[in-house]
Structure formats: structure tokens, C-alpha cells
Length: 237
Image 1 (cartoon, one colour):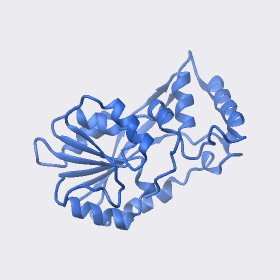
Image 2 (cartoon, rainbow, N blue to C red; image 1 turned 90 degrees about the horizontal axis):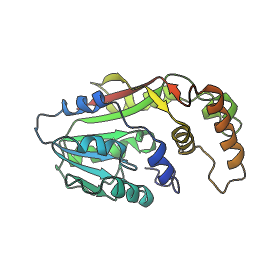
Image 3 (cartoon, rainbow, N blue to C red; image 1 turned 60 degrees about the horizontal axis):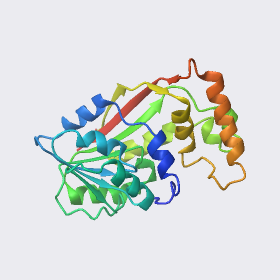
């Protein structure tokens, strides 16, 4: 698992990254028979999905390798007695064998070693595994491709191929509408939180930020930028 892609970005990540559709989270609970399931949230980041899971019965282990991300998760999830923040990776969670009823990961699978992750899922389970991704309906902004071509043509099809290979058969994909409405600071934080964004000490940072500001000024209406979005859930036993 890549563990340093978001080093130094935890605060803006916590502010700008979106959660998953509530209906998608409800779907996850339908994958297990237990009334109070034990859930491992792998690559939990600052705890976006963890927080949604923690509102329901059960216990959640938020496994995250980056210390800054874990610190943000601990601050944001403080007081929730059913959440446990764990220093671990997708390939070595540190969780006990046969200790969970469900394994989930959101916006993180592409950082994992899929073979080692599969072995770890089998060790801490056996349990259903669900991979979640938010997918805005429109393409990234071409004017930012000077920094990284991903902004113009993200390779989403490659990601889906890796997910299919991970699960093999059977594989199920369901989708849940999750439209986004960004105020100025939320949009800025979202765009600056990506692993592909120049860091604050990079000479390109100010130019990149100015480009993001221009996008919001052009596309927002009444101070809000609306984006159609879908939460995809891939799962297999």
C-alpha cells in the first residue's frame, strides 16, 4: 500500500473530501447478517466513511497508515465509543484473525497491493469485501492538465478493471446518486486535497490554486458549484 501520497494534506483532505451516499452505507449493512457487525474500514483516511458507519450499531476499526490522517480521524471521531483508530495498512492491518464481519474501503483501493490485500481480507475474515468510489459525472478540468494529464482524462476504466480482477466472480456493482454542492472554500479544499495536486512548497502551487479559483468563479451559480456524482459500491464474498 502506498502510504505517503497524502503526507501533509490531512487537514485539507478532512475539509474538502466528500462522504459516500447514505444509501450506499445502508447497502453495506445489508451484506452482513449480524445486527451489530464488526467492520474494518481500510485506508480510512480522516474517517469520512468511518463516521457514517459509526452512526449505526456495531464497531468500526479505521485502519490508516498515515499519522497525520489518523490524527485528523481521532479529532473528528473523538467521543465515538464504537470507533477504533488503527495504525496499519491494507496488506497488514494488525487486526486479529477472524475478527471482522465486513471489510470496506472508500476512495483507496487503487493504492493497495490487491493480492496482499485479498490475503489480508481472508485472514481477518472471512467476510464480504466492499469497495466504494465516488465518481463525478463530468470530466476533470482540462485547464489543469498542464500539471497532471489526469485532470483531463482520468483512467477510470483502469480502476474498474483492477476491481474486477480483485474480486473475480461473483462481482456485484450498484450505484447510488450522491450530488455535490460546493461552496467556495469546500471546492478549493476538495481540489487541493488530491494526491496529484502540487504541495504548498511546490513552485507550481500558486498557479494551480489560481486555476482552481478561476474554475469556481466561472462555473458557480449564486456561490455554489453543483456537480452530479454517483457513489459506486463493488462487492464480493
